[in-house]
Image 1: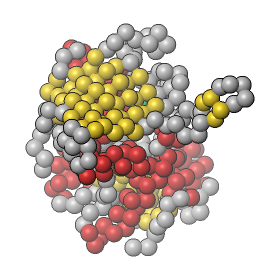
Image 2 (image 1 turned 90 degrees about the horizontal axis):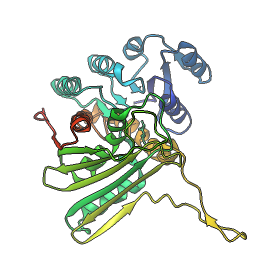
Image 3 (image 1 turned 135 degrees about the vertical axis):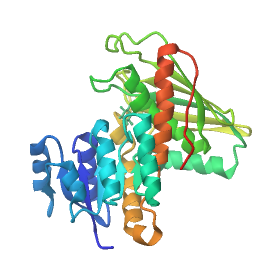
Amino acid sequence: MTELKVAVLGVGVMGADHVARITSQIAGARVAVVNDYITEKAEQIAAQIDGCRAVTDPLDAIAAADVDAVVLATPGTTHEKQLLACLEHRKPVLCEKPLTTDVSTSLEIVRREAELGVSLIQVGFMRRFDEEYMRLKALLDGGELGQPLVMHCVHRNANVPSYFDSTLIVKDSFVHEVDVTRFLFDEEIASVQMIKPASNPGAPEGVADPQIAIMRTESGKHVDVELFVTTGVGYEVRTEVVGAHGSALIGLDVGLIRKSARGSWGGQITPGFRERFGRAYDIEIQRWVDAVRAGAATGRYVDGPTAWDGYAAAAVCAAGVESLESGLPVDVQLADRP
Ligand code: ISE
């Protein structure tokens, strides 16, 4: 295939980032169409890119004859309709999380795609493309740690948007740890419990932050996660796996350590997820573009997490939200995989 013509729907933080990435870093693709509910923003971005136009209706963008594939970075509430349109027009799509905003519509998307008999939807769980997570995965698969038994995760943000409530900490932040667990251990999560310690006095009124999540996988592995999204400090994402023959830790984010004449030493803390996972996003998009371009021959237009992974993560988060209310462990309800 010649150069892949991509429509980027939604040019907020992530969408605009992807437009810049595809335009300047990614081989074999260009942004042909952009769309946003703020029309002027889309027009401004389109004006800066050769051969790119702004389209007002996202469904028109998906249907356009000069669009080969779609990046969905629109609000989650619009995903269901837009994903169904991508399936209808057989357009490969990279969908930023969430797949959809509830479990039943996510499952419906999985089923509709399965009926088509072709893999068109990839979900943007970018950590799977991060060098450190890839090395950890290779270590586990190589068997050197022996059987993995326990995982400890830390997920801290300096701050989050003002609309974040307690359930978004589960659905927007914890969801990454859910995907990491399924990715690293290659199995489903059976139950989840959310614990609410005393809240950070700096967190907005009524928001339970920090939260501690405890997951149990189908084979009985234990995963605990500290979620703390109003630390005011920086972006800290750590993962430690403890196996029968040793342990492995990623995410220390040490970088350069400087020692000064004043008798102090230290370094820089990564401010946010775009900086921490910038390289992972590059790899994710390049591999997706390559897979889509090869898709006609392979019948597979994804190289990474699928619609099923988006659905499974949503099912775990729904159990997490339920547990947030009761404080008790909640079993994850997962449909049979089509
Ligand atoms: C955000 O949406 C992300 O996806 C980040 O990776 C995560 O760290 C943050 O908590 C979320 O709000």
